[in-house]
Length: 280
Image (cartoon, rainbow, N blue to C red; front, side, top):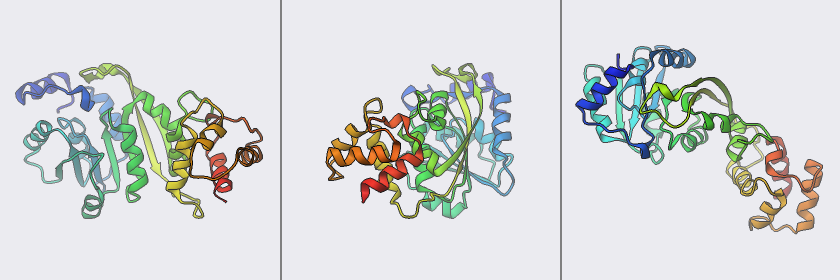
């Protein structure tokens, strides 16, 4: 098994790998945490799993024992070499060298009928990647990811929480998220600066067929540009809507009951109603 300190150090030494902080590379070295992640993922031998950031194969190894096929996307060429060498005897692993934030996953999803993503995500891309995958690839219904604790808190935050942002609202409209357990920073090599968290994300259908989802998401982003200031200030700074201050105040007041409300105080339904009225 790869998931222990001595084996991880041995692989890093043999392949002359120095973990890159800019790529968010932190390798899991705790078998108990790994087993808990696999338990949460509920993998069957019919599942075709997408893994982003295979690293030296710690999670990959566990996934291969359960899944029909694992499609692993890794950016770092040195880590690609490790994966190819460690798993050269296995035929249910597909290794792709690519930047996950720029990669078009549609051909992979169609070719291998990918239905789940299970990943220890690099810290530097986790938030953007999770949202992009959910928003752009409806075929993947279920995600189990190990992410920086703060990212997990931002994804699940509610109105008035300190971590409540535009991404919190948008994620609530396209997914259901369950937080499982925290993971100490001490079970990684090298140790990151903060603890991590395992979360499960289930994709749900965007239910508002009368709205353009991308336009709604843009409106939410604009609303949070100055999250601690009045919502009206953010809306009036945007040139997409030709509304006077009085018209905008009237709409905000009618929808929220407070013309001076801030974006961080509103839930997803409030943003839906505001967007509908402002678009009229």
